[in-house]
Image 1: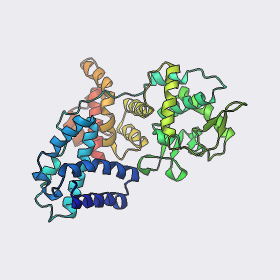
Image 2 (image 1 turned 135 degrees about the vertical axis):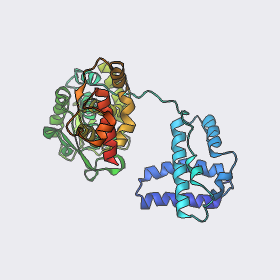
Image 3 (image 1 turned 45 degrees about the vertical axis):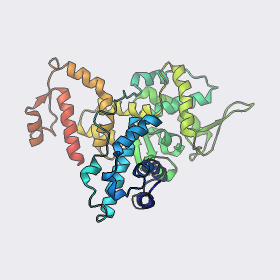
Image 4 (image 1 turned 90 degrees about the vertical axis):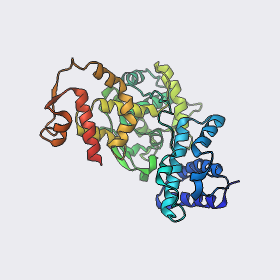
Length: 369
């Protein structure tokens, strides 16, 4: 039996997220699903007495994970929203929750090492060139569209939801610019508004340009760049239709066919974004480059980029580490010489590439604070 006052507090918290914090409705619905575990665990116990509840929330979640086959990542998200909920309760009702310590709230988390890291995957430049080199029949409009879309996703780093809702007018190929504007109907994460840019990879750009010229000649500027294709007795034709809610999922299904034809191992379309990020970070030569990649991914700051993608460049780190001692030292960039941070961190004006990248990351994190 769920405690009534606990239920009302949970609904009040969700209203706060929606109205005050302007959290999207889909996120609030997901948080409600996660918060129900807290309410069920407490049963009749008041939220303010949660620290006395036995078994602990951690033990309860272990049982739920085992019986419902929840992934460790899902358990981690439930723990995260639970911490946020209890923190809000303590701030909103300090007298009622004075016995609920911040240390106890912070203890609601997975044990370190409980979640076994999974290998992260992404599309490499070589794989993208295989996709771009695929010879698609002129009569297969759908495959031409999907091939161009795959190349555009890698070049831009945009999410699939943005791609399938992108009007033709928002693709400025001559400037290698993408206008990810929710005001133009583009579906971006959390409604972010940004102008992003394409990598300068001519063979991939050529595939995108071919489709761009075709769709722009057939449809008005307000139509979708990833256009709807209908088939009939006279062959396939483009249609000016608004994207359905299932468009992203349908693209992922069609992507599998494209990858199999190109001889590339199938994976989700989001891995194009990972590939864009890895390519950008591997070729970043300065702090400005690193920041540019982060901004092009529409991240809030450099720490977000580093936290998500640092593990994806693990192979490059391995190559650099195993090659230490054989590399030639390179000169520090002028913006890093003569500063207290660079002197303390590096202790010299020449460093191996790996140390230079570490220095860039440290400086980037300080700058983003």
